[in-house]
Image (cartoon, rainbow, N blue to C red; front, side, top):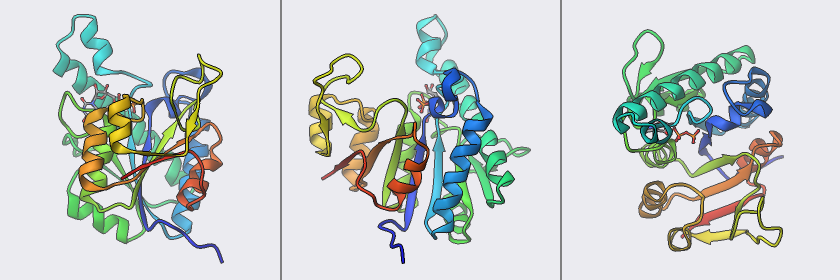
Length: 239
Ligand code: UDP
């Protein structure tokens, strides 16, 4: 019988991972493939909360560098995550996975508001909870959202899906052929070396609350199931 290392996971999907090869927007066949993997995880009895990014549609920083007020641009980014969340919900429902979207910005017609106790209740009932609109605050990221929600719902781990890279390297593997991949890192090493795992706010939150992060490559969608089942792929960041 297969044994699982994790009981409850937060899966962080960057917006980019939903864009497929087009690099922008939502590629529905890609979202369908990811949904099929999430279904596999759920079928193995693992609680799954998904935090969805928005970078495939809009990034706050990009707007603010073009003269837009940063907070305004960030709210647009949060709205982008809601679009992605609804697309993922639709794909999950197409494969009969019970799903709830909870939004950190109230939008009653399309999503429940984020209520921690309710999110936990959904997970206990075997529903996949998609956490939309980030933290609801500008100047944060969906990485920070993943760290915050993982602490709140007492997840065992954050599964950090990356496109185009299979873990954390000491330099950019796309530019440096000698770049070395780490199997394991401490939070402090990530912060001190300035490694591009997640932003420093998110890393600090994980460090303070002892939440491990596993960075893995989502180009092969079956990696989502492998990593959730405890297979040693990617880089683990822990104490
Ligand atoms: N964002 C925000 N507060 C949050 C989460 C997200 O302001 O709590 C905004 C921010 O502008 C960010 C955008 O939403 O650039 C999209 O999120 P992110 O860049 O984290 O998405 P990803 O890189 O994972 O696709």
